[in-house]
Length: 288
Image (cartoon, rainbow, N blue to C red; front, side, top):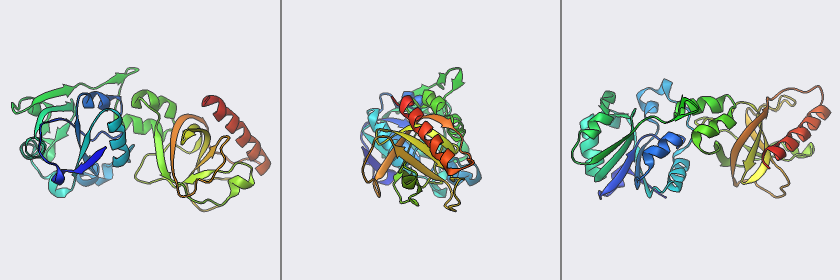
């Protein structure tokens, strides 16, 4: 998958899907259908226009590009969104970016897509332009609810990862480099691969989850480990079931399946270990 900053894009006939596409959910998939190029933004426009309202992301740009590639997209053109670009008029966005830089012959957007200074451009403005054919995709609904990145963020933050699957069309995932912990999991008989959460990204609520970690069934704890005073803050700790090996300094991908329970303090370490054993068996069953 080619990720190209907008200034480096060469114009050519393109079928372009335009949007933020955070999460690459079912609604995004419909917008992208038939496109060979995706035009997106980094950082999220709200991070520049209204920082206090900027959301944590479901997918950083490299992961977004990978997911889009799986949908048949050949190229992701990324606008380095900054204050100067935020002042660009809607007309300039169409003339200089969509037509000029990209050479678009077909443009696909969601019905609620807005662009240009003060969000004055919309899907109807694109549809009225004779220089390219415009496809406007209506909002997609699942189980009577509109599919949106904001709704999915809310589900993930609440720990409702199983519910989020219905809107994403896939499992919610987190990736990161495995770091060294304090070795306590190994002492308890359940060695874990540990990730430090990226504060710019959404993560599930604290608790224990059934998941796949690099394809292996896993029991994953997200939290501060209240049984022990570590002072390390929130960690994501994955126990890969029936796995042996060293994962330090490698990338770990965790695909969340289901929340098993909340994080809590146990009367003793022995009772904690017994509960971890039950969590592992439950995760094994869920991931079977």
